[in-house]
Image (cartoon, helix red, strand yellow):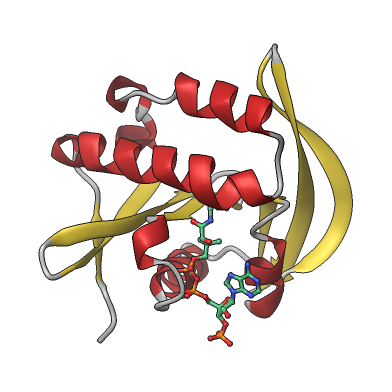
Length: 155
Ligand SMILES: CC(C)(COP(=O)(O)OP(=O)(O)OC[C@H]1O[C@@H](n2cnc3c(N)ncnc32)[C@H](O)[C@@H]1OP(=O)(O)O)[C@@H](O)C(=O)NCCC(=O)NCCS
């Protein structure tokens, strides 16, 4: 069964933060050094998810539990995040979140989406039809620059 995708609210912040921390420390750790994922995870706290109010921000829920979240910048035409709890990986949750963000982007008249993918998520986006454009350095904070892959998809 597919997860239910709905708009996130501030009440979801704790669960969202828990999912992102776990995904960074376990899934992203496969492609980034321990020092980088440790700094990255340390930056995350429930109060920092302002995007819930100023972006198109959704969560995926199955059997009453949050399994993942996705974030779209509709102005820039950019998928800013798709994160799935490592315990729920490989069950189609990421794919459902991404398809939902793409449908929203089409509704808004966007013709193309960009993503600055983590190295670990590149095969996931490639599977969904995104093309690799360039290797880029993404500044999370002044002390942390992550190697990422810029990818694009025509909608
Ligand atoms: C990337 C991520 C969101 C994928 O979520 P998921 O729920 O495990 O992925 P799904 O089960 O929906 O997979 C969708 C498809 O992508 C493929 N896929 C997913 N991850 C893959 C990987 N690492 N390598 C190869 N294929 C992969 C699946 O096989 C599946 O293919 P199918 O359509 O043929 O069935 C998840 O691994 C994650 O949260 N990663 C850490 C956070 C992150 O880096 N996010 C990106 C930030 S830009």
